[in-house]
Length: 140
Image (cartoon, rainbow, N blue to C red):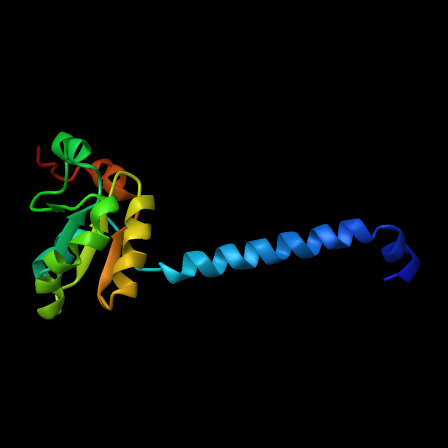
């Protein structure tokens, strides 16, 4: 690169460095809550063969409107306070699959569980919307 160009446009290079750092920090932050995703098509087999527990992290009103059959409702804002309720599943080494409407709250909740030593944490890829798209049953 031409040193004169860099000197004359230092602010562009400073902006580039700041943006790169912000992208890197965001990527690392998201990675902390990383969980393995499972598709709506795979979930019924996972429940049947692995005895997976489905935890819906939608708020109570959304949960009443429709959820995956046999799902447990623990709103995303209450996951940290409900760790004791989930301990019995961890003790049995059962996988926990988190779901919500579109997958965002489930990802955040997965990070909380992982930080609290839950090893087999999964999220439903695409959330309940993907479940419904596959015409899988909804419980109301």
